[in-house]
Image 1 (tube, helix red, strand yellow):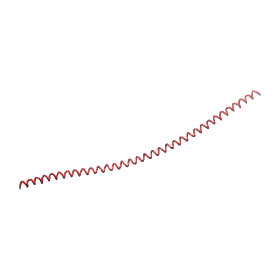
Image 2 (cartoon, one colour):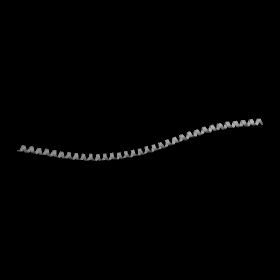
Image 3 (cartoon, helix red, strand yellow):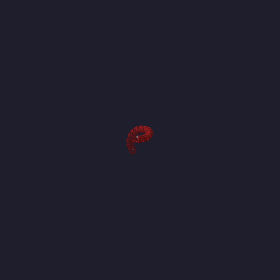
Image 4 (cartoon, one colour):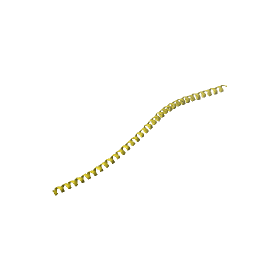
Length: 121
C-alpha cells in the first residue's frame, strides 16, 4: 500500500511538473500571439498608409499626364499658328520683293528715258 501511495505521489509530482511546464509553454505562446497580433496591426497600418500613398501618387501622375498632354496640344497649336504666320510673312516678302523689282525697273526705265531726253535736247 505504501508503495502504491509512493507511486501515486510520484505520478502527482510528475503531473504537476508537466502541468507547470505546459502552463509556461501556454504563457510563452500567448505572449508570442500578442506580439504577432501587434506586428499584424503595425503591418496593416503600414499597408493602409502605402495603399493611400500609391493611390495619391497614381492620381498625381494622371494629373501630370493630363497637364502634359494639354501642354503638348497648346504647343502644337502655337507651332501651327507660327508656321501659318511665317508662310504669310514669306508671301508678303515675296510680293514686296516683286513690287520692289518692278519699281526698280520702272525707275531704271524712267532714268534711261530721262537721260535720253537730256541728250536729245
